Image 1 (cartoon, rainbow, N blue to C red):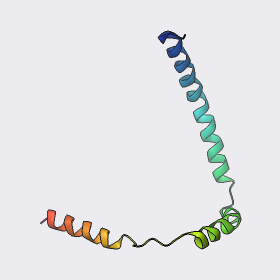
Image 2 (spheres, helix red, strand yellow):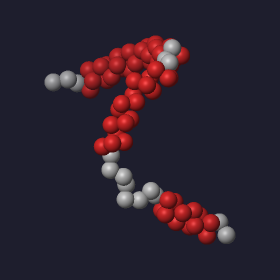
Image 3 (tube, one colour):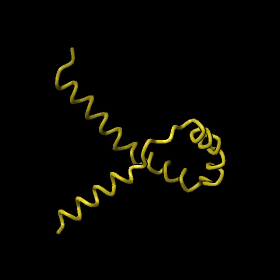
Image 4 (cartoon, rainbow, N blue to C red):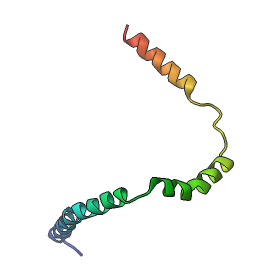
Length: 79
């Protein structure tokens, strides 16, 4: 059975590892973003978007009525 000290030691090592890995992972992320061709990615995802459009069921409402109700309440509250 592990002790609190063992658990704390494991957690401290994990925190240290993530502190070291964080900046490296951020560098990789930024490099990937800089080198990504957005047009190519969108073209590759086009069939996924089209599938989602074909398979999705339209919502019974757009939320516009709810939004207008909230705006009305805010106007009344700010008078």
